[in-house]
Length: 80
Image (cartoon, rainbow, N blue to C red; front, side, top):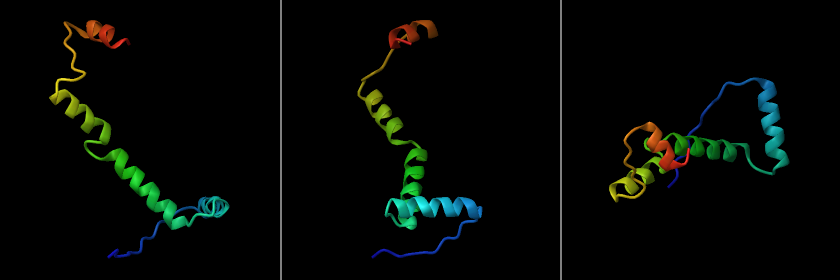
């Protein structure tokens, strides 16, 4: 069962008013938008994030692994 908790956030009145107006225009509860933003922030800042985790898995499988004699050689192989 979901346990609900309260959270308070200090912000400028104008920011709150703008946020609430946009939420109302989109017919979305402000609390749901905040939860979505929190989930997005967590996902983007997890260590390792999803992209890093997939890159590590590929490296372990030997995929997308490059050997280069120097930085210029590596950049050339990568096309950058």
